[in-house]
Amino acid sequence: MSSQSASTSKPAAQAMTNGSGAAAVLAAGLGSFTLAVLAIAADKSSTIKSLMNFYRATGPLSGVTTTAILVWIAFWIVLERYWRNRNVAMGRIGTLALVLLVLSLLLTFPPIADLF
Amino acid sequence: MEITTRGLWTLIHGMGLGALYLLACSGALVELWRRYSRADLSPITEREEAFLRWYLLAMAVLAWFAVLTGTYIIYPWYRAVPPVGTVNLTGYPQRLLLSNPATSGWHSIGMEWKEHVAWLVPISITMAFAVFNHYRRNLRNHPQLRATVLSFMMISFLAAGIAGFFGAMLNKHAPVEGGQTIHLMQGESR
Image (cartoon, rainbow over all chains, first blue to last red; front, side, top):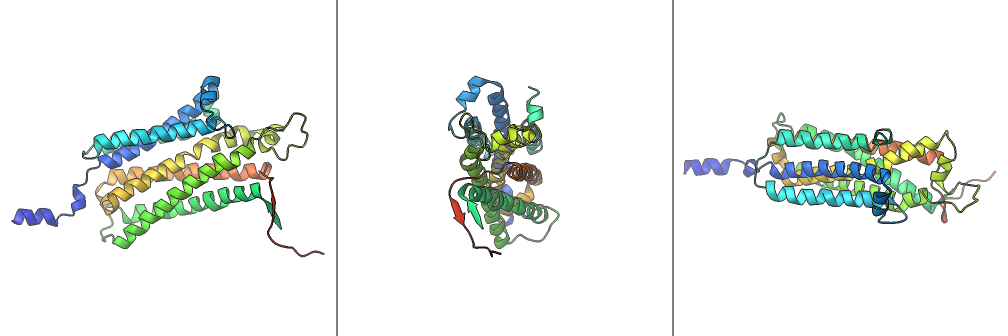
């Protein structure tokens, strides 16, 4: 009885795993990185450039961003499915996601993108 | 006092959505940093929690509208190709910038960076909203997750700042103008 009351007096939220948060964070990093890689690819390859031309008025930017958004959402759904009830190594996953985001910021900077 | 429809859309995109997002960002960062830290021992009320939830949702909506209006309404006007032999490039901002070595960098570095880096913002803030909406006050119990979300928001703040700065400079050197003229107010005549 006492153990039951102790467990119910705990905030229910404490039982929440970090998996959902980790899935959202890593998917955001992967989606951002995909955007940067696709932007470079569309700039360097005429084939990819024409493939990314989803909406003529906007040009390849339409395909680059739409594809990156779809990749981001796909990663999010998959990771959420696998991690939602688990506790994962948040420190490592968070660092990886942040590295991907910073790389995206740098890779979209034209003087750096032109190095490839 | 008049404004063109293209000028009005640029205003909505830059001042109405982009600038408002930048202003909102600092508030969200402070709130997440201050109230959702383990060091803050005072309980978080439902009202506070609901406030930040709506605040982050509003930021995500602002960010999405900003990139969508920029990419699908203004950018096509910006990159329009003039007919062969066009001498006056005023209605073709990209070509106008590229026609002068002193201004071409605003396109080749400024716009090329802005058009991509801005998209990191809605991704980051949507993630921040989703995480907060899921964990709410329990985010205090996940300090690493909270730190990562805060870092994402700070980087997205930087990305929005880059996009905003180049947007303002591009509009200064080659404004997107055209379309119907809207009369806003009658000025005094001398």
